Image (cartoon, rainbow, N blue to C red; front, side):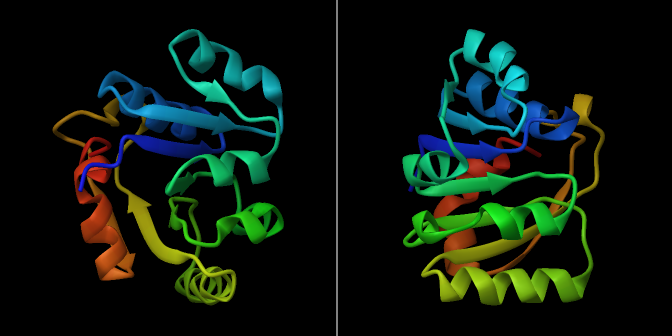
Length: 150
């Protein structure tokens, strides 16, 4: 299955690079960031800016989270996550990943955790590597979209 609609939460250097790679591949990308100014350059390239994290999560079946810390993700994941696949690309510990997987399951979402082994300019290029673990069925469903990133 090809996911054409993707949400990216967090538009720092890495989150912005993830969103740009998806846009270049022709995906419909909804973006959200606490500082709204960071969405402007991506909107100019075709992204859709959501008014809130909840609206961004509700916009797409695949939600990629790339925030500064896991705690921020815990704050923004809410009821809109039901039925979504959450791909957490925020740096964290195995304990945090397991806790987030449990939280996502409690919200009715599927969870995949990832570790990015690349710097932002590498995203979307052949040398970028992202390691994934978690819900294998969810990963397989979105494999083609996630492969765009690295």
